[in-house]
Structures are given as C-alpha cells and as structure tokens.
Image 1: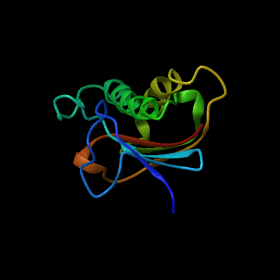
Image 2 (image 1 turned 120 degrees about the vertical axis):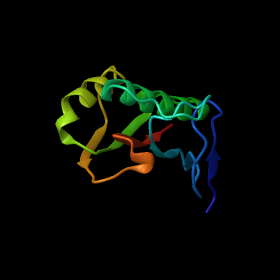
Image 3 (image 1 turned 90 degrees about the vertical axis):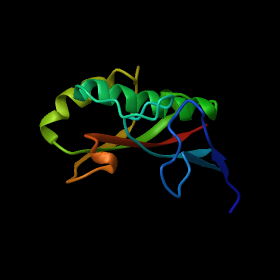
Image 4 (image 1 turned 135 degrees about the vertical axis):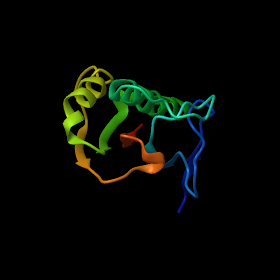
Length: 126
C-alpha cells in the first residue's frame, strides 16, 4: 500500500505505535487527538470547553501539515466520558466548522487515554 505518514511538530507526538495521520489516495485518516499541549506535553485540564478547544487545535495542526483545514473534513468521531458534556463539546466543536459540517458520531465510553474527557478523530480529503 502506498501511503504517506503525516507528522506535525505542532500537535502532540504519538504516545504509542501509531502515526498522527496517514494520507492515501487523497484521503487522510487522523488518529484520535486528546487535549495534550504539544509544546509542554502536559494535559490541558480545566473545563470541558478548554479540553475540546485543545483537541480541535491538535486536529487543525495535523490537517494543516497536509495542506488541509476543517473544510476538508468528511467525518469525525467523538469519544466522551460523559454525554452530559455533549452540549458544551458540541458548541466548541461546531465553532470550527464554518459551513457544511462533516458526518459524525459521538459515543460515550468508560475510559480514554490518560483519563481525558474527550478524544476526536477525523477523516479528511484533499
């Protein structure tokens, strides 16, 4: 399979055996991002809104590395520890999509890496 590994210094380094993203035939698959600050390596903690903004900034950095932005996103997957935070996450998430938001699912899970409250992945196209 012929694909390109996408790696941005402006997003957190992978914390396991995976790439930040892979690009194949003009489609980019971005690994789930959590609210890690890429400079300090520390978790952004505070409100769910602050955490979600950091996740979206991390996704943006990876998209930009491949010459894309949120307008290129076809689908997102949102994983949350508490669906009670859905409205707050949704408000922040929605602010990153100017028009034509992508397809999406939101799933409540029992636990996420580093015990964060939100993780988001996406698929984008050139």
